[in-house]
Image (tube, rainbow, N blue to C red; front, side, top):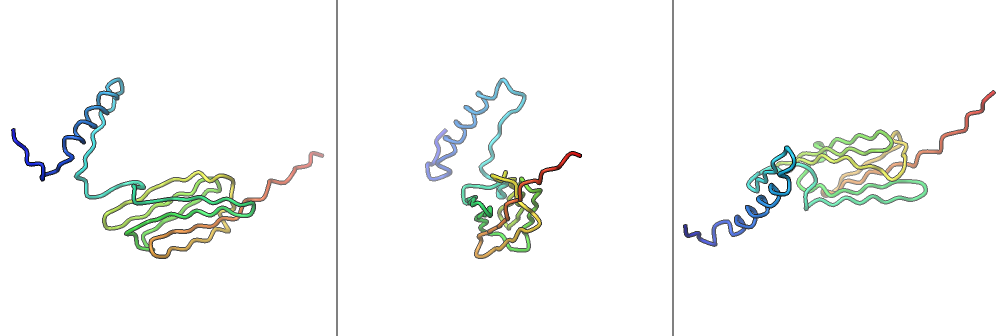
Length: 133
């Protein structure tokens, strides 16, 4: 079989990686199958970058979400984990971030400008002592 190298030049490489992954996982019940032709990505891909900045007073999360409209972003926080769900025409982002310290999720503020999401939380106050009488 003769293959024109101009047609999908990385197919052989991807097939070899897939073969090696399947061989590594042969003891598991799962068979890894990579499909490089998918038009929709799930999860945060290589074009997305997330930074978490921590100070004594606040936690700041900055995430790049290219190709996403502001009204397609959903944020949830339980005080220790921030969940970012966002959808665009070619991407679907779903990420759970463990925050470095407990935050007061009720004081959170978020902005989205030019594909950059910024969420700011105040650090949660230490729990108060309970006196036993």
